[in-house]
Image 1 (tube, helix red, strand yellow):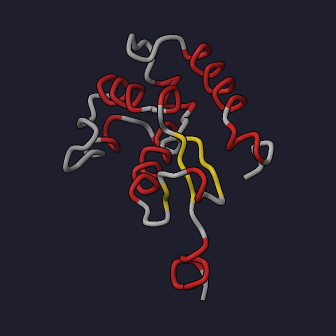
Image 2 (cartoon, rainbow, N blue to C red):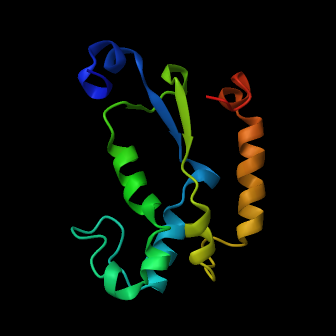
Length: 132
């Protein structure tokens, strides 16, 4: 077996999700949901109406909406970067773009540059030059 059935894997693997500060995409998601008249983030049925409000061509880019929720709640996620083997960036470019205009988010290009600078400043990112 492998994955979550593999005891050694479960005992030794942890991932850290960068989602503080500029990495926190909740502001962009809130604006995205408002723009597309979707239920609020955290609601019982957060994706209700998505099929009728967006074309298939647009929906296929929204895997992040589903993925990030699962990643945030995953049992192998650690909140301590010193325990992590793998690092994930909670940044969703399409969400940032499709949330505009959004005063809470501000300029998307500025946000991208801030994310880049935060990563470069992170000792965890620099540890292996961002390869983990």
